[in-house]
Length: 256
Image (tube, rainbow, N blue to C red):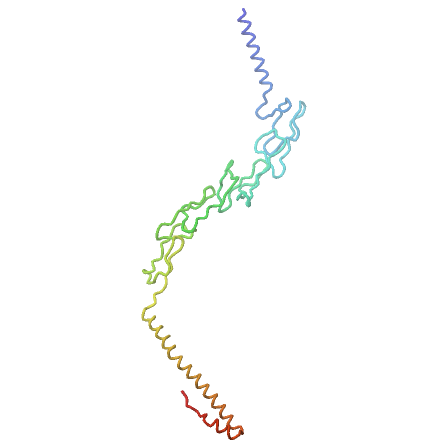
């Protein structure tokens, strides 16, 4: 008899607990506020006034630059994400609406370093390969550039997709003026025949050797003409006899 009473009591307690749980749990499209289960607002809208025993939930659309992407019981919408080219290296891929947030993507030359819900929230500039390196794999919107070192006998300025062979001056009929490095090509120049060099040097020597006597002779001749004119001027001017006799030794000595 006692066992039967206990069983009945437990059944009653279980029924009461289940009844309270069912009474307090709101439906899937409702939210609980102040002991009431209120209907949720649809995506793109937020709660303007909560429901009461006599009225339903009052909803209004999200304002500009705000969104809610799911049914809700919120009194405010979320601010739209800003794709900032200057700070985050991002641009707008899909504009924000009342029911969906902005979707950002990396700018050209950038790659995403932090993704969220199908979009990018932070990007970084692609690595620039240094001189002496080549671009092994070009950067994408979600992967950085991969660089690799040039091997011996090749070069790259850092912007090439593969290293180039150094120019072989001898095969081009030229001489190597400057050897190539990992970042620059070899410098080649034309060969100057030995006979031409000897001829040029000989010509310069002849010009110098022959020019000096000519210049000296011209200077002496100029001095002689000046001297002769000066003497003629003195002879034509009346002078005392003793001065004329003194100057009589001045005679032309000939030219060079």
